[in-house]
Image (cartoon, rainbow, N blue to C red; front, side):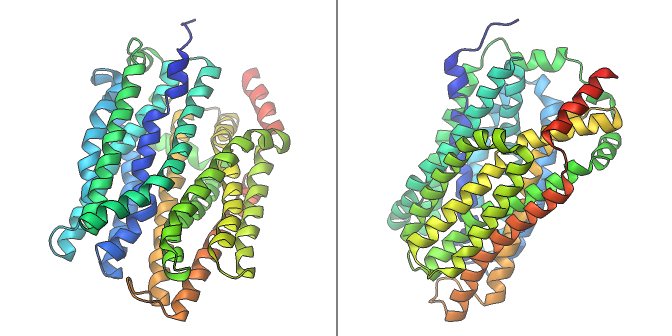
Length: 452
């Protein structure tokens, strides 16, 4: 067996993803707000941009997998080569996503182009980093550490961004303009991302492992047509319903992170407190991820997922019982957010269990394709979140950069509280009734597969 990986590689593998997450948080927290409050688009144009980019992002995610599979062997360094190629191209395109060049419709087209092109490339780079986890080592303990390092990096990014992101935007915007403030902030985070992935590229230079894995390993999936693979997915109801449930869970998380801008700015009149809220929710997300490993063992993955989401929905809803103020709202949402992250920590293992179920039911294994579907709930969640925000703002008569009427204030409060509560509850219900695979069932199915 090959020598063990160096500890420096194992425990710093997530550096690239840390800086990637810093950059991507600009979109999670501010893209909708940029369109309405900084680029000053009408809600109609902003909605058009959101829907086009949302649907396009789903296509980009699927296309990125095809690109990585078809071209990675031909480039020097295998998967690693994408860590050099993609980040420098992503940064200028991502800056275009937060620009306003020309008239409203011209600016909207440029933003859409920047969005789709940058997301196609960063999906390739992000997927390549994930693929390296499997190609660098065959040891399960080392793969676990590498995967954990990625998660730790992305969670740490949330904490760092909560402190630095809003402050940088405010600082640069005050000395230039709102749009240029975004440009400079993105450029700084982008340079850090390039350096982060360059570091990962260098520490993973151990004999071009990804080329060896791709070219020398026989994969049973390669002899299946796309139609056959899709057919197998639709013969796996737990997988399909898990994707639906996880889409609702992601919708709740993304919604909170994005709509908090409007809640703190127009309801609580404390826009500066947003950085505290971002930091606090990022911190509890980290604690939730740490606690999830223990809770999941005690309760089982399935019970941990749906119980956490039901409790989260109830706690989100409880915010209606208290008078709106910064700290009460933040504490309530932190507790509920932590529960949604405890549920989310089970998701990779739950997807893996659907692979076992699919092979047990059909006799065919499509593990790689199944695990690639992990990104779909993220994309669908972002799309649904944006739809809720845009439709909600139009329904309540929201007008950017003006003093809100009592009706608008009440509308923003209701949207902020009910949306995550309802989506968490839907996730729990869909999962509870649709995903019936217990841990003991997985063991039984594995034994039956092995005995065939």
